[in-house]
Amino acid sequence: MVGQRVMYGIGNADADVLEDDSDKCLWCWETRDLKLIPKSLKGVLNVRRVCRKRIQERIAAVSAMISALETPHDHPSYKDDMGKASGKLAKALKEADIRQLVQNMVQTNRTDMVEKEAKLKEKELTKELERNKREVEKEKKRMEMHN
Image 1 (cartoon, one colour):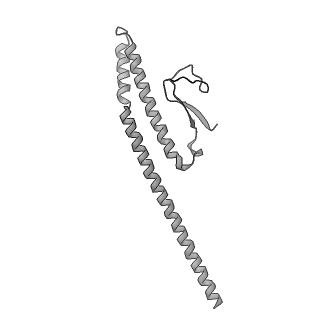
Image 2: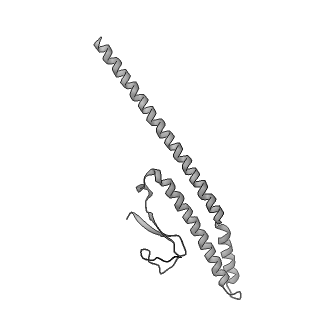
Image 3: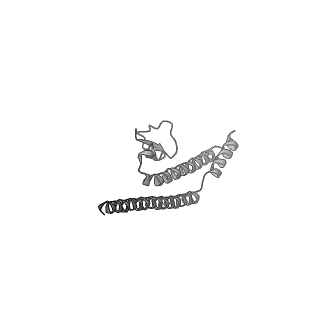
């Protein structure tokens, strides 16, 4: 199987991975193995995946906090639920931080691609110079043999 459907929203135990279309689940089709993707696109896809996971963490934390706030104050687990939800919310990146992460990763990806392209170009030029050098040497030998 080449692709898989991944959920980045609020989980639903009854959701069918292939048929669920609820807005809360935020489904996304992804390639299972990035080896199948051209190298030029891997960085971009990796950035998107990482950021979707950070968004999913934020959604889960906000959802947990909403659930905790909806719990009656006199419920025995109210304080514990609020503490856990607050902890999750504190650990999850805020929207601005997620946006900054995206920008940083995209910039890093661009820089890496430019460096890789420069190295590739350098290798190609080196090979071409070596080829030209061999051709010149072959031509010299031919000229010497004819004289």
